[in-house]
Length: 456
Image 1 (cartoon, one colour):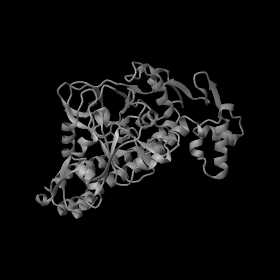
Image 2 (cartoon, rainbow, N blue to C red; image 1 turned 60 degrees about the vertical axis):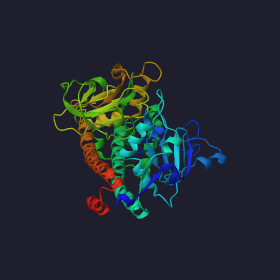
Image 3 (tube, helix red, strand yellow; image 1 turned 60 degrees about the horizontal axis):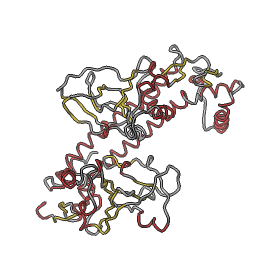
Image 4 (cartoon, one colour; image 1 turned 180 degrees about the vertical axis):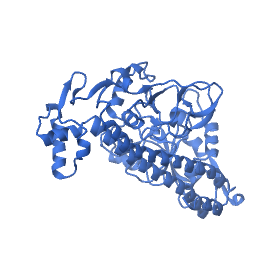
C-alpha cells in the first residue's frame, strides 16, 4: 500500500511558511492569545495559561492562526515541538515559532501533524539542529522534512483513527481539570477563606473582623440569592468566631497554627540501590497545570530525587516553579520507589494531613508565591530553599476535630477518579504512539487499526 504513496516535502505542500510575531506577553486581555514555545507541551496546549499580547489591526491578519495551521518551535531544547491549531480563539504566534499553512486540497492538516509527531520527525529534527550554544532549525531546514503522503481518503482515515485516541485523552484531561478545580475550591473555601466560619458568624449575628468584611458581604449575598447553601452538619464542625494571631492575622477561633514543615514531610528519605531499573520522571514530565505526570520511562538509578506513590513533586528551580510544574505520583506499584530530577522537592502526607490536602496546597497561589519569593541564586538558576517551608504558616483545626477527615473523604473520590482517568490516558497514548509509525509507514492496514480503536 505505502509503495503507491507519494514522497513529499513539508515546504512543498505548504501554501505559507512564516515566522511569528515579536511582542511581550501580558496576562491582561488586551488582544488575542499569544502562543509561545513554552505553551506547547507534547503537542498539547493548556489555553487557560496562554497569555495575551497587544497587536495592531494592520499586523493581526498576518499573524492570526487559522484552523489547521501547524506551528513548530525553531530554537533550543524545544526545537521541533509542534501544535496544530484547532480554532480555540483568536490567537497569534510568537517569533520563535514557525507556522506552516498547508495546501488542504493536497494534504490533510491532521495527517501531516501526526507525521510531525512520529519517530521519523524526531529523528529528522535531531539531524537538522544546527548551532552549539542554542541549537535550532530555521524555516528552510524544517521545510525540507520528507515523508510519505497517501491519497486523501487514506490521510483522513489515518487522522481519524489517531484523532479518536487523542479526543478521548483530551476528554479525560477536561474531566480531571473539573475534578481538580472542585477539590481546589473546597480547600480554598475551608482553609484559606474560612467560608464556613464566616457563614456561622453571619448566622449567629457575630461581629466580622474588618479585613474579612468584604468576603463576608459576598458570602451573605450568595446565601441570600441561594447560590450558596450552608450544610449544618459541616458547619457545626467549624467555629463561629475569629481570633487574631500575629503571624497570620484573623483565623478561626481555637484552631492551631503551625509551619508547613511540621505538618507534612519534606523530602523524606527513601532507599534505591544504584543500578536498579526504576521508573524515572524528568522535569519535562511534570505538568504546568493539573497533576498528571506524563512521559515516565524505565531507567537505571544513578542519582536523583526519590519518591513513592501519593507523593507530590514540586519544581524548585526557575522558571519551572513559576510555570506551575507540579505533579502527583500515582503510577508506581505499592512499595515501589521511583526517581527523577534533582530539582524536585517531594511533599508527602503526614498523620491527618493526607495527600489530597498536600496536592491542593501545592497548587495554592499563596503557597506558590511564598516559595517563589524564597528563591535565591544567580539569574536564571534560582532555587527554592527548604527553609521556606518553616516560615509558611497555616491555621488548622485541632487533631480531634473532624474537618480534615471530612476534607479527605470529600476529595479522595475526586483524586481516585483523576488517577483512573490519567492511567487510561497513558494507556491510550501508548496505543496511539504504537499505531502512529505503523500507520504512517503503511505497515498497518487502516481496517486493522480501526478494529483496535473501535471500542474506545
